[in-house]
Image (cartoon, rainbow, N blue to C red; front, top):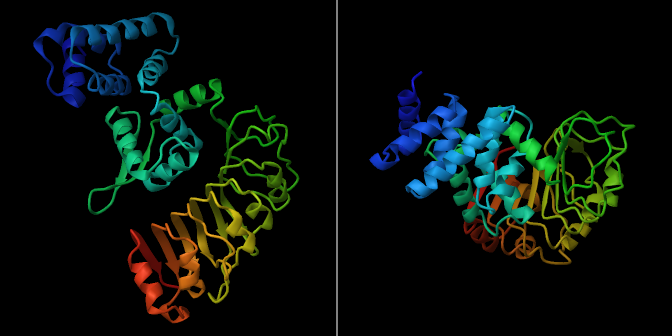
Length: 362
């Protein structure tokens, strides 16, 4: 492929229109990307975000030249350059996508909820702007859309993920591991991608540092009590751990802002696990996500002022008193049939006022 072809691809895919005074610089940048489609896309995504001036583009050209001259893996080097150019507010959001297993279709809503829970930003609407910026830079890809065109899932290219894992570990931002026995490296966030056996032990030497733990292949019953050691956890996600009785130890993690678990429903659909009443002391909790239904304890002893997302709540546990204790709820997923609910009209009026309400039939 000729230099001109590289340049046309660079312009067409992202920039669309290149001022004549920048064509020579653009051709140099395109040639140094050596025709690698991912590099062309990512560099073009960056060029589309900066001023269209000779000074700005020459700066990018110098950076690409330095990468080509010094990096053994030129593709990864160009991607790293684009990462370094990111605004500071986007860097943690981008690196955080590394928590998910390779080739994952990541739910957009879940990702943004996690960004907010981690403190990278204050509200979900800002998160959508951040995600849109990363997509326009070609660092994150939209995978699936809803029927109305809204983004449903997203993901990253394998090479981009390699960059994320490298940078995240170097900065002690995140450690992704498939070996639970590996010594924990005093980083704030861990993502475990392996099957965890009953005799495996969580390393507790970093309890004062760890704020986030994701388990994508489950967690054994022997490990659950060990979570009590990590008293400062703000995010806990155990995707494949099923329980019949909600683990009391988890309600003692009072700093949690995001909690995702999987409960075990009664096969007949009449009884769901009830969270212990100490859940009302988890005042920082912002999102509580359970894949099956759960009941919240009646007679709330406190208000969960920060709780905005709740799923799945058993319809039979709904009362106006309960919803009065979670006054800022915006998203709710209910499970069960209408006959289970003994609530009054005041409660139904409150439910209808929620930003997003979804009811799953039993």
